[in-house]
Length: 297
Image (cartoon, rainbow, N blue to C red; front, side, top):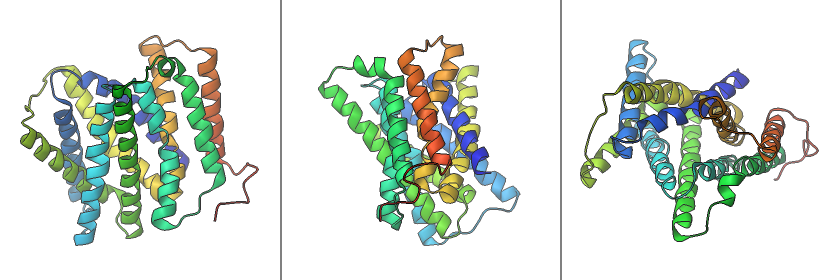
């Protein structure tokens, strides 16, 4: 089951970039994100009510969902979208892949979970592979004030993503299932986005084109309802560090799709990077490693 959830998350989130790209233009970015999570939250909430699987929560549960909504369904998306204004999307992907390391460190700080060396090694190997995959973009990026701003927002977005993972772990340890947690968290995140847009005076436009509406539905249902539920279930079952290795595979899937959709050309460096990412994936899911019997206390 873990492997199915893992690759389901990778396939879904590795293809959402197409839908995100189709949304750029008429509608302001924060408004598009609001539409996405408002629709996802309402659909998930309605489904849970109809099937009578919506769990009751106490005040602490609502506070955890508010925090998760703020981190996972609001701030991290705003940070990543903002980062891409100043740095290439490839560099953003490389920074986001560090979520594996962030999650391992945060799990240690939040829960006292031992850091498994093979997960850390896998994270470094996967990170190195992504650097090779996106080397042309990285090499062409000039150091500047804008670059530093972009990197800062990408790092902040990754930290928010990791913090949202920890809050989901707390929910699941308290007996709150990911479906209920996500339903409330998405609605809380959408409410924060709505308030921010109203305060900032961001115009609420809507693009009625087939491309925009189709992209919105894909991002809300498969991309959010299914993708986040599968991923956060993995966080509870596998631990935050191993589950976060998904973030290393997303760009690989995206580039594979881009090969057919946009004519992406694979280079020897990119193929070596792909091999490193796959090897890191092997380390995450198998116990074959020289460090298998040792862990950082």
